[in-house]
Length: 352
View 1 (cartoon, rainbow, N blue to C red):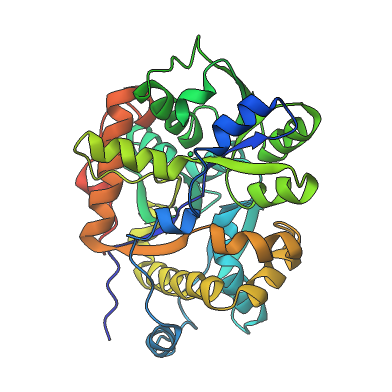
View 2: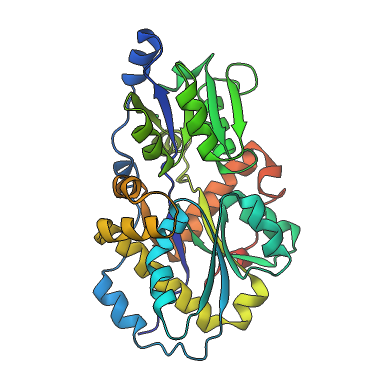
């Protein structure tokens, strides 16, 4: 069966604002009154992957002996968590197809991708657009890798991801709710999510914006922490009110255009195996958590709790292009520089 390659993998990081209940009871109750439902519910409209049985029968017909190899980079979080099954299977194969590398920051990935040291990489969604514009279209997006706000006024928020999706998502949420990010709140940007967790633990009455699995990591360190706001849910409420179907997209998988054009079968196999790997994280949480721990992404116990909240899902075809282009349009309206000055052309979307 011919596979449809116009796909995008939504690794929708459950960006959440954490409130620490060790502070005053007033701030705790006001935030608690706005606690969201589970993040899984906020992403219920996303397409679900095909069953593993169907995927396996499709993949088994592919002869991988002469496909070559690809150097792949993923960020330490849901993107890499969605890859663990294919990482494990590839390592056990007699003819490995991939050289996987896991990084803590997108800043480590970008120069390697531009210089040709990486073939495929998971990066923040807006960074993919910036790379496309700055390299004259030499980067293609292969896949999308996917809480009352008024109470935040006057607060200090710890966050990681300045200059990428977390910053623009937070600024959008604040400004659309009448809060000036420059004057009404204090945002302390950290280089890594782990630093936000440490600051949250060390600061009384603190708030932090964290994606899974760092949400679960923080909760295991302090049982008084709770999710105060679901950023994905807030984003979609605002988008709906503004007549947009934009979904909060935190990360995408991109490939160097020349590599994609020269290795169509290998790219197809990568996406096929990635789809199966994502399905595995949903169908066998215990097995996936064990692999996540094995690859030192987060401890197995944390992964066991975090995986159901990570919203690792799969979107393809026209729906993928529609959701990502709508999201980039929202960023363009907010800050053109955030996506490289202009919307990418149609060739940005891999529809092979």
